[in-house]
Image (cartoon, rainbow, N blue to C red; front, top):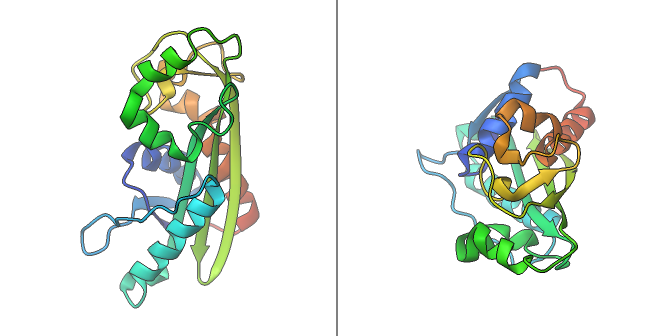
Length: 197
């Protein structure tokens, strides 16, 4: 199956491709007339609502084009820190751009609760059918930035299923085994139950 991923984040595309290509599916970024789609994000604190909004916008952009025959995939994800319920959540990108990793570390400087989790919602539409799945990766926030791989909050996120390293200290294969995006994509594939093409 050819899947067009509606995201401008090349790191997310690489993660999705690393998993889905092994199962015979191809993942490419969605481009309309050579351009990346520019989505209007709803003012919502719910990942699923944001993902659904992105999907509707993507479907309307490819209507009556040759892209209608392909599967369209969207996802929305965020880091959720226990000490600050709902934060940064759906605003993870904005918070990252605003205060960065150092800002998060400063906020947690005197906190004894450093628990956090990555959450993601993935939705795929193909031939008027819709599948959705979610994934969670629990972990803690480190006391300093560690590692050079990954993106976003990866240098300060230590997954519980790992060996004590941050996501940024892992290569893509190690991260893919335990990431929230992988759990969500695997759930999506299980629900699809379609042969690859």
